[in-house]
Length: 547
Image (spheres, rainbow, N blue to C red):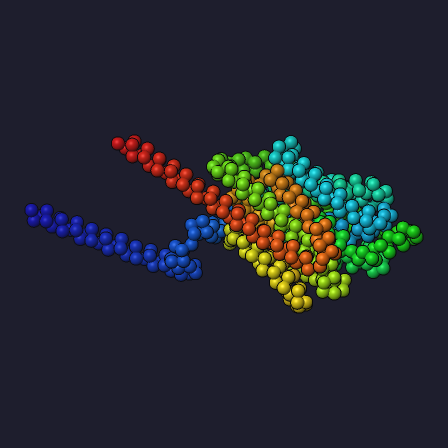
C-alpha cells in the first residue's frame, strides 16, 4: 500500500509539473499573440468589431503581398496572367491614344474631306454608332468563343490600326463617314474585350488591375494630343489649341460624346478654316504622320495577344475559371440578380449622361454664363481631366481596402456635393469656387465606371462579353441623351440649366445606388437564410445517422 501511495504521489507530482509547463507555454503563447497584435497595429477589440468579410480580405491581402513574389517566381500560370494583364493595360493605352487624337485632328480631317462643320460633326455620330455595333457583336462572339479570345483581341487591335491608317487619305466625305463607322466598331470591340477579358483573368480579385486598365486609357488620352500637336497646321490659331483642350478625352469610358465638337473647337475659327482651306488648298496636311504612328502603336500592342493565341493560354485560363464557377456557382436569387444588373445598367447610362455633358459643355457654360474667355475655358477643362486622371491613378492603390459598394457611395456623394457647390458658386460668379468644384467633380467621377463593373461581378452577375457590351451600349445611349436637351435649354432659357440638369441627374444616380444596395443586401440575406437552412438539415442528418 505504501508503495502504491508513493507511486500515486509521484504521478501527481508529474501531472502538476506537466500542468505548470503547459500553463507556461500558454502564457508565452498568449504574450506572443498580444505582442503580435500590438506590433500589427490592431488591438483585439478592433479585430472583433470588423466585419468578417473585411477581416478576411485584409488577411488575404497580407498573405498575397507575402507570397506574390514567390508565386511569380515558381508559378508559370501566375506569371502568364500578369503578362496578359499588362497586355490588356497597354491595349487600353492605345484605345485612349486613338480617342485623344480624334479631337485635335478633326479640323484637318474637315480640310481633307472639304466639308463644313455641320457635316463634319457627323463623324462623331458615326463613331458612336460604330461603337455600339462593335460592342454588341464582340460581346456575342466573346461569350460564344467562336474564335480564340486572344485572337479576337489581336484582330480588334490590329484592325483598329489598319483603319486609322486609312482615315487621313479619305478625300471623299461619304467614304470618310463609312471609315469612321468601321473605326468605331473596332474601338467598341476592343473596349468590350478589354473589360470582359480583365474580369475573365482575375474575377473578383481584379479591382486594382481593373482600375489600372482604365487609368491607362486616361493616360493615353493625355499623351496623344501632345504627340499629335507638332504635326497640325496652325490655322488661325485654332487648331493647335485643341491639343490642350482634348485632354478632356480622358473619358471615364471610351465612348465618344457628341459634345466633343462643342468643347474642343473654336467654332467661329473653324468655319473660317473650312472656307479658307477648301478654297485655296495651298497647304498640304501632314496629319497622316501621327495617324501612321498610331497604326504602328496598335500593331505593336496587338502582338502579345497573337503570341498568347499561339500558346493556347486561354484554354488553361478557362479551365481554371470553370473550377471557380463550380465552387461559386450563383444558382440562387436569379431574379434579384438580374434586377440588380438592370439597375446598374440604368445607373451607367445616367452616369455617362452627367460625365460627358459636364466635360463637353463646361467651356461653353463658363464662357456664356460667367463671361470667361475661350482659353480660360480650355484651362479649366484641362484641370477637370487632370483631377480625373489623378483620381483614377489613386484608385489603383485604394480599391483593395474598400468594397466596391462603399467606393461608389463615397465618390457618388462627393460628386453630388461637388455639383451642388458648382451650381451655387456659378450662380454667385465666384471664380475660385468654380475652379475648386470643377476639380473635385473630375476627381469624384474617376472611379465610378470601373467600380460598377467590379460590383456587378461580385454581387449580381458575372461580367462576360455580353454583360460588358450591354454596359457600353448603355454608356453610348447616356452620352446621346443630354447634348440636344442642354443645347435647347441653355439657348432658350439660361446657361444655368447646365448645372440644374446635371445636379438633378446626380440625385437620380444616388437613388439608383440605394436601389442597387437594397437588392444586394436582399440577396445576401436570402443566401444567409438558405445557408442556415442547409446547415440545419445537415446537422439533423448527422444526428439521425448517429442514432
